[in-house]
Length: 325
Image (tube, rainbow, N blue to C red; front, side):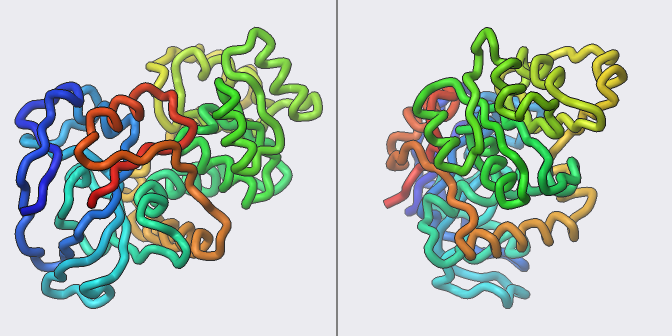
């Protein structure tokens, strides 16, 4: 019998248990996947705690990213077959050894990518692509300031930004995180939290204002980063791991800059064809070797508490992954 991390009520990681959990046979349009790896993100833990803006139904199996092998296919599924190596995203049900997923949201793992890399690939890279291409309409030669540059979406934004021909400036807090951002291709790195942070950013951009800010951090960082923007600048709001903030509305006016929300779930619901095309595009680019997710730590499924705590701490220089036997 396969197992899953589950709980009847939302709470901290230690309130969850590892129990037998058989998702059953796939229905029409579904596939059953033997999960081999699952990404563990800050948002996954926030959702498991019941503190995210979206609350899933109970009982709850956490997780939103996975990779594995197709075990069975439901009626009407022709693009996938038993034995295919696949990956995808889901609203829960991935901290498990098996799961049922809509075949339309499942893709084959690109050649040369292992299960752990594939598990943390889709959400991060589709988010970064959607943010920079669709929401910011980034143009080659523009400057991109990435906050939280060693985090999942931050690192993806560094790699996507470089692919798009942007001048990428990464903001990271520790030497390990700064090294990770450089490995991702950042043109310059600045010290998060430094007293002269804005001066560092300006110098890293040759004394010019910033064109695009990629912000998965929130909190005090948002106000500081918005002030680095120049005319026509775009500040992309990806998340708020550092907490919510109150940005004064005179800043967009004085800067002639925009505050732009980015949400993958909303995009998929409002423009499903565009979201599907983005998924295909980033998969193709990964298969060509352009994108390489950074993995900081791998844990066996039995150590889900430690994995969730590390992901929630924000201390990892890269992604945290659960691996199933």
